[in-house]
Image (cartoon, rainbow, N blue to C red; front, side, top):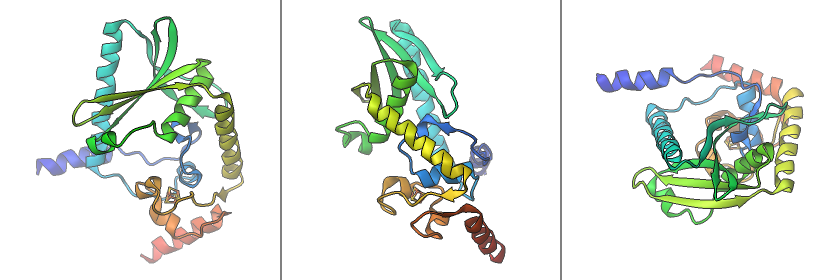
Length: 229
Ligand code: SF4
């Protein structure tokens, strides 16, 4: 009874609307999945339990922000990147430690993933590189928190201008495909890649071929299957 009401509360928060610009968190993500978000393609809703896990991660962020202020090293928190045309995003914090500025990005995860984390995740490095690029800061910190045991690991990342430029170029290329209604090819590693395992577009992706295709024709195909069902 109460569980159903709580679950419904979380499920009702899910907005399904067209994405209109890239977010920094899209860096390193499957281009086809990002394309589908822009087109508001049919997606599997996340279950209430996953939404509660995300919310718990946000509480942990707030807790770290509080500590940064008390340590007097947090210059600012939840700061938007400067406005420009291609991408928007909000860094967790900009810190100053021993006269050196850092962009901080906090990630939380369960104990099992945390235990096996011996180097920063590639997609997290990509996101941090873009924050470093737009804030013109040379160093960043990826701070990983074990949600279950409250353990912490950190990795210092140096700004890599070539990597940042190549990520922005990828966004530019995907933007052209979105405007031209060309669905990008499947992500390498489909279907076993972790992104595919958690992808909300997995069902429609498997209805298509692996290569590029016309979005309007594919959309008609999805709608005709949905009508028959
Ligand atoms: S299932 Fe995999 S390849 Fe297909 S859209 Fe999702 S992440 Fe991309």
